[in-house]
Length: 316
Ligand SMILES: O=c1ccn([C@@H]2O[C@H](COP(=O)(O)O)[C@@H](O)[C@H]2O)c(=O)[nH]1
Image (cartoon, rainbow, N blue to C red; front, top):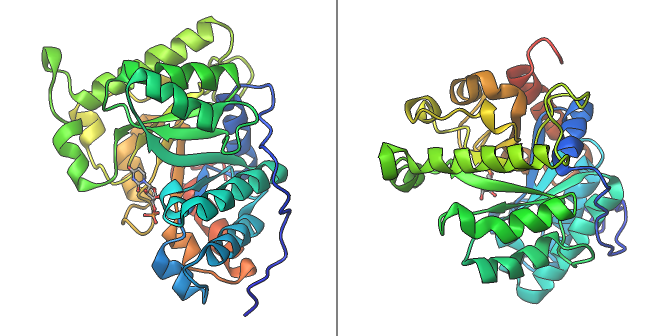
C-alpha cells in the first residue's frame, strides 16, 4: 500500500465562496450530486486500519486521499475538526490544506467545529472560519446555540455577508442530547423548537433582504443559508416536540446515517415532509472502505444512491 496517493492539489489556498448564497449553492450541489455529505473523521482506529501512523503525516494522507476519492462527486464534505485539532498545530495545518483542496475541487466544505460562545468571542470564531481569506475558512460551519441563539449573531452575520452558511445544532444524534434539547422552556416550548424557530426567522429575514432563495424563485428547493443539525437517529422527536422543519426553509444536516445505525426508514421517520431539505451525513460507513481511493469512491457512490432513494424517491 502506498502512503503517497496522488492528490487533486496540495497547494494551500482559501476556498472560494462564489457570490451566491450558501443555501443556493448547496441546493445546486445536491441536485448535481445527490443529498449526501461525506465526513472526514480521521479517528485513531481508522488511521491504523488504513495502515497509516497516528501522526500529522498519516492524518494528511488519510484526509487528502478522501478528498481525492469524493471531491467533485458529492454535494459536500464535512471535516471533523476534533480529529485535526488532536494533532496540534500540524493537524490544523492539514485541516487548512484539506479545506483548500475541497475549494479547488469545487466541493462545498462544512467544517464540523460546533463553536458557541458569548457574542464577542463568537465574533472571533466567526472570523476564524467565515471571513474571506481566513486560513480555516469553510463554506459553512456547525455552531452550538446553547449559549443562546442570539449569541450566534456574529457568525450568522459574517456568514451572510460572505455567502457562507451556518448549521445550528438542534436535535443532535447522540442519546444524551435529548435531556437538554427536549426540555421545555418559556411557554412550554421545547428548547430545540425555539432554536428551529430562530433559524426560520433568520432565513426569512435573509429572504426579505434579497439574499436568500425563496421557494419558487427558480433555484430548486430554495434553501436559506442557515441550516440545522438534526440527527437521523432522533426518531419521533421532531413530531413530538411540535417542530416544523419545512418552515425553516433551510438545509437539514442529518448525521447518524451508517455507523450510528440510521438508514432510509429512520430518515423518513425523522424528516417526513421536510425530506427534500435533508443532507444526509455519513463518515465511518464510507471511510471504513479505505484506504484504496477506488473503494472509498465506490462506498461513497453507494451511500449517495441510498440517500437519494430514501430522500428523493422517484428522482434518482
Ligand atoms: O448530532 C450530531 C452532530 C454531529 N455529528 C458528527 O457527525 C459525524 C458522524 O460520524 P459517523 O462516523 O457517521 O457516525 C461525527 O463527526 C460527529 O461528530 C454527529 O454524529 N451527530
